[in-house]
Image 1: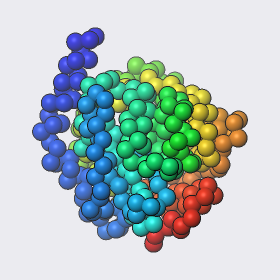
Image 2: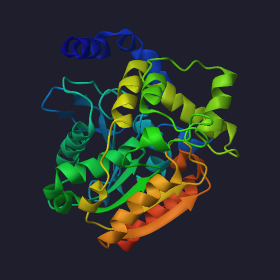
Image 3: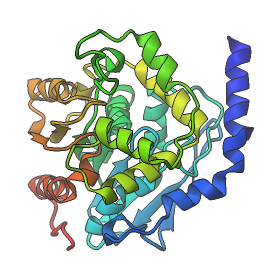
Image 4: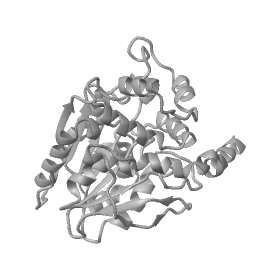
Length: 338
């Protein structure tokens, strides 16, 4: 087992994914008709290296004295996933985005992938990007929402220091294998064993640019009414992730159980689910909302007509909810920008 883990780590660091960095970068920086999907140029680069040597790509946009928002992306994505929000908020706010370990242009480091690693990496980013005496609104999507919950669980002493509020979007606290509906029939008609999910999602299989892949992505990940451009943007972001990283993190998330971790997030928190979300269905978000309500920290719970990519499929609605949360927790500037 130790030898297999070592081989996997070497493969993550030196495998074919390391030879395709240029191509993967083009997938992250493609141009689109809708300006809010295009990358935002000239970021401030914040150097962050974890204790085990992972170099995290961290970008900041907007005025240094603006209200701080830290966006945490999900599984198989990268910081460009937040382009619609960077465009909307960076004019008046200090927007911080980063590539999770192994994703985008961040390296994998030497430690195993697990919930505590997600928590520690977020802690490193907050320490580097949130100025002394300031607090941030934390926004986590999917695995990013799990990262925020794990951070609160493993670093509860940091919540008061760094967090003003939080928004958890299309996320979960565990039981993914037994509750996800992304595989047809399974968990809807037939219970899905965890080994099946590990076997399917843990495979390091590239996603080719084919019409069939697009159709499957729309049918199982997005909502039925998602536009062609929304699918194109979302799929390009996912395709930019190294297949081996995608597979290894999939296994990690399937085995992750942080139920109740949200109760350590003792700040006003908005939870947003998608009524068409098959990957992390709405009851997963509702359970987190119930945990937050039990300690008086649920600021709002809403269900949008989206699949799993809420901030892409319903950009205006998600931006409006984040604006409301910022203003409700003391933000002094308008957060919307065209």
